[in-house]
Amino acid sequence: MRHHPGDHSPAPHTRHSLHTVAGPLPVSAVRGPALAHEHLVLDLDRTGDGAAVLDAERHRAAVTAELAALRAEFGLGLVIELTCRGMGRDPLALARIAEESGVAVVAATGWYYEPFHPREIGGASVEQLAGTLIREINDGLGATGIRPGVLGEIGSHGDRPSESETRSLLASAHAALATGLSVATHAQLGRGGLAQLELLTGTGLAPHRISLGHQDLLDDPATHRELAASGAYVAFDTVGKESYQSDDTRLRLLLALLAAGHADRVLLSCDISRHGYLESEGGQGYGHLFRSFLPKARAAGVDEDLIDLMTRRNPLRFLTGADADADAEEI
Image (tube, rainbow, N blue to C red):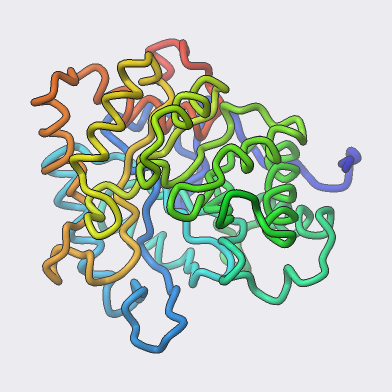
């Protein structure tokens, strides 16, 4: 697939700045940690019970309060919000949350995994799908003018993507190549990361522009090492979701990846994806990473420089495409 000069105006994007819902943000302005895979507004409800929802009106105040508290307590500087097409994305609500919390938010475009694919994927070609994403990246989400700063969470389930998931992943890779954004995936229950990586890099997309999602749900250190050794980011991004995987197992897997020398490939987050996970409803909240998991990592010997690497420098490098040895003054 080729993109000809003049087909699309390039989105202004450099390794020195991020696209946020409030506009360009210098990388140097993000001085505190980032949450690399979150949802602030979404609707994944397919049963009518309303559980897999973070409503722009009913839950926005609680979400905003949590982020503001994390900014005050831990210096939270950035949330990479991976609610995309077909997931109840609301860029104006994200902009309001960012403004009221004081935490920068990066919005996303792309398609989740097949059960949530909207009709537009249907029989559309890879090129048609890529064109949709490129238009959103360059022109903004709907009429809002808000530009996404990442492609995600691009989904698949099983060990190999389905036919429509394959088209979605390929379209995302082509859009990434055309616009300079990075791609964050959803690998259902941690499976299929190697297949996702093969598809994405097969287009010419560099591994360091790719984050493989939910790898903390896969108890397979060898796969984690293989993904990291390729240069891709390995996302341990469901921290605190004990019904899927215990944090003790997550920590064991993380320590194994660190021991193998891959700290510069790790991303961390909590993937809050239903209102019952909010602190106001008795859930673990967005702060579980900082209040529970990272203290356990420190107790296991992980030092502050590694924590800053995993929670701040790595997310910024992922978004901007900066090298792992980027100048400290830049990131």
